[in-house]
Amino acid sequence: MEKNELTVIEHFVELRRRLVFIVVFFLLAMIGSFFLAEPLIVYLQQTDEAASLELNAFRLTDPLKIYMQIAFIIACVITSPFVLYQLWAFISPGLYEKEKKITLAYIPVSVFLFLSGISFSYFVLFPFIVRFMKQLGDRMEINQVIGINEYFHFLLQITLPFGLLFQLPVIILFLTRLGIITPDFLSRVRKYAYFILLVIAALITPPDVLSHMMVTLPLLLLYEVSIWISKLAYRKKMKEEEGLAV
Image (cartoon, rainbow, N blue to C red; front, side):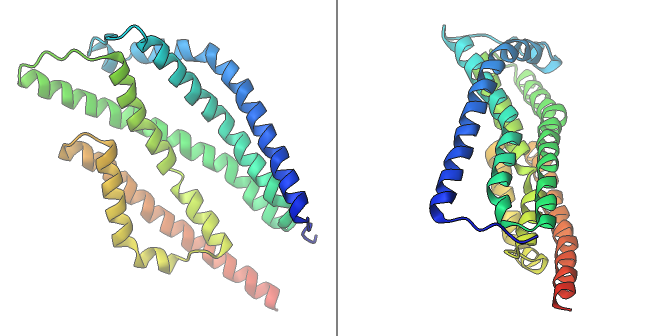
């Protein structure tokens, strides 16, 4: 099947229509998130890590601030698959039928990787950092009085970036399929990519070696997995081009 060709004006009209869909869906998701935010906040405070810290509110507006932040994040997470679908629907007229099926399959994979990153950071990394910091404070005989606002800020600082960073294999696969990058390029820039990942790990973790390594190693492994995925996608792309040439 041939690609559908649209004029520039038709592209802008279609883009505006997709953006309206996204805004309406986000507003509906935001309304629904108001009912989910409070139970989620209560649940997060009942975990062993939160209970051991005796969270406190230092300002009258802290509970409202946390409630709105969590509600907004829930709405963004709910909306993200819909945003990806709308993006796919916008570019799909310019794709062949096989390309449409391949790119559509990226959406569930992307959602799965995002949730995997969130799960890893919340269930593995975050408890380790909290325990480490609490034990350090106890050894130094420091009475730690933790604000609930600071606790949730730190929690989101650790978990959300991991959810986004776990999108790396999907992004690499997509760019490889488009012919923008190659496995050889990823291998050549490996040392620069490692340095960038080290900096990212330093930004989202406390200044201690153990926490930094617990973040850095999965990111480096993720990059190597991305190179391997890029190689598979590149070989497949070359075979398809050879088949078309014949």
